[in-house]
Length: 325
Ligand code: TXA
Ligand code: MG
Image (tube, rainbow, N blue to C red; front, side, top):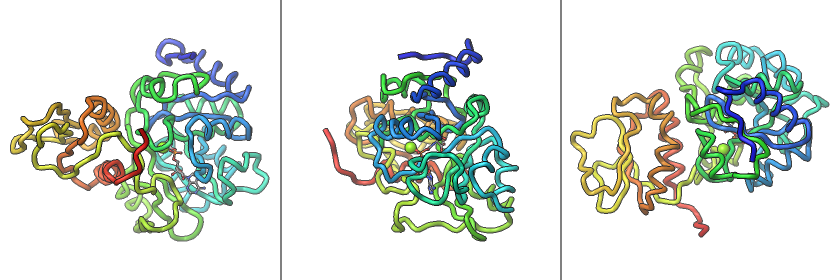
């Protein structure tokens, strides 16, 4: 498997990615949120390859990553609200689901046959690749479906291995949580997934509340499936102590918490900083899971700002699920 590190070889990383994508290959790419597994969004066979590599149910549509709002508008209809959000938060961890332009050239598989399209201009090398390729990069997170999203190139290697034709190593993802997804197809913007931009910031800009889909509505975003982001161990939320044999995931001050019975413990952010906690979340879950503990106890994490998305991911990781071996 070919791995190129951007700090040593930025130009080679871009040009090799374009070669591989041009041949219909899959490239694991770093973004500020998590690593993505990218294909040329106009190439149906390449896009189908993503579903195979991730063993992902076909009904899940993919995010298309672009180089600018101008490029996004070739594929989607942006109304005043969508444009306002893009202008303020792009490049950044915000995905906008907007009406898809007919005959825009993207393969139908990208949006799983829906008449909407999810678009995002991420920070970093992906926009550069999309600009030079002249097409958006369809990319879900670069993990096997249902597993924890990768925030380092090593995570991608361990999960997908040779299923990616090329891995671009851009270091650890700065945000570490997937993008916030907002659907803007009529007057009322709908929050489809909490993520890297706190909902309060979006609401402050728009001067209105986002509509929140109930958990029981049909799946519009797989981030909405109850069990998702699943480690092998079970999770116990809002833990006030660690029980014998548990792994412990702390947040902030552990002064009053009994963690001496834990086999292993990690702190998402000893200072109680939610940004730092978000960036560390998936790596910490992976490390604690690798310790072999059956249960990961998680200290209470505030639900404000990025804490909302962190709690959402932990709740899904804690949800009961069918076990595979
Ligand atoms: O931060 C991120 O968003 C990362 C990086 C790689 O960009 N990507 C990511 O992709 O998390 P993925 O495939 O794991 O999640 C994409 C989400 C899914 O929940 C999907 O259902 C939703 O976007 N989505 C895509 N197109 C949609 C559409 N037309 N309508 C509703 N939801 C859509
Ligand atoms: Mg994912």
